[in-house]
Structure formats: structure tokens, C-alpha cells
Length: 108
Image (cartoon, rainbow, N blue to C red; front, side):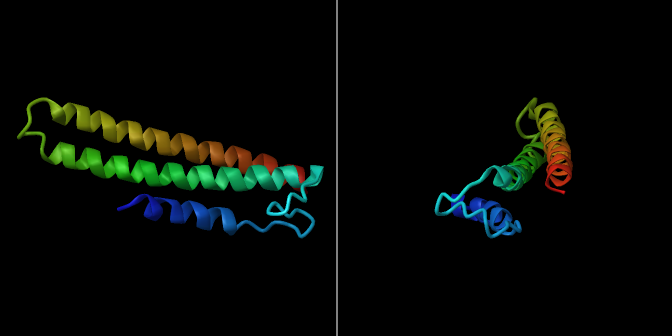
């Protein structure tokens, strides 16, 4: 998988956010009311990128775990790597939930 394959979900997540017409980020037409939408689009991008990285780390550590008996001592490191990637994914999803709740409260 190449870098472009990782960035496509991120770009799709950023482009799928409903942004009002008065907030045109491409041409620099940004007002104070546009800040929550900008934060929300950045949050979507970061969460999708974090999910992609977490999936890659889960697969990598899964292969390390499978090959653990061949290389001595890597089984425990692979288990820790799987645990840490799952914890990282949960933390990023919780951060997304908090930011999304705050942004939806502010924009109402």
C-alpha cells in the first residue's frame, strides 16, 4: 500500500463535511463563524489518519506475533504493540467524540 492509498480516506473525510456557503476555505473567505467547521474538518482528517495508522500497526504486530516463535522474544513485544495500537485508536475516537460534541453544541 502506498502513501496515496492512506491519504484517500483522509481526503474523503475532509470533503464530506457539510460547510456553509459563507465559509469558503479555498479562496480565503473565512469568518469567525467558520472556525467550528474548520476545527471539525481537521478533526475528521486526524481521526481518519489515526485509524489508518492504527490498522497498519495492528497488521504489523499481528505478523510479528505470528512469527514470534521463529524470532525469540518478539511475541511479548507484538502483544504490547497490539495493545498500544488499540489504546491509541480508542483515545483518538474519544477525542473525536469530545470535539464533535463541543463543535455541534457551539454551532447550534
